[in-house]
Image (tube, rainbow, N blue to C red; front, side, top):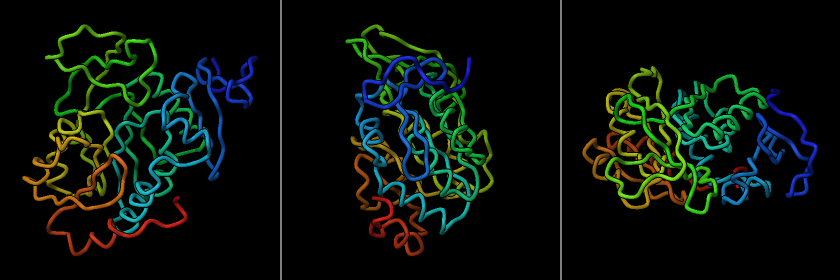
Length: 264
């Protein structure tokens, strides 16, 4: 099956129909980037923003740019979804982008983005991140049968209701990659962030990267505080940014800088 091909049907969004590995897709091109937006997730806010020709959380893109310009190296990007941030992160990273997406169909769309945009410094893994190597179940649909898109999540053992539609996926750890120049960790893993951080503890101790997590209920703050990280007040929507306390004087002007029009 070809990676990307035109569909015989017209897309509901009004663009020419495309398929990625046999799945319906909308194609958008802006900022010299090709985006493949899955039809099954077109109702999600992330997809809607890309379809309208705008980056998702533009301030995050600027933070990645500024941190990696100040501390050239590699980054971890967990929760790649359909690759909506991959091209931007790739172009801002002097080293390697280690990207992870556990949901198979999301991974295939992200893979299409890597290929179409020739992202030679991206290593994309069909896997999740956690505290240990394991096989887990990821729920991918809600009770109405709609795809959860980037909100798919790892099922915890204590959950009481039976799963709806799941995929069995491997978990890796950041530490097992032994990244030699880790400058930034960015996690959007639907509540699994503390487990991912536990699996990155040695890497964090060795390299003291800037850490950005989606954490609306404060799951990570105590852990990062114990590791001598300080939260920075930066407008990142649902994300929270933390920097090593010993690097406050060095990094605060970088992470806390005002957003520029270039990334709006």
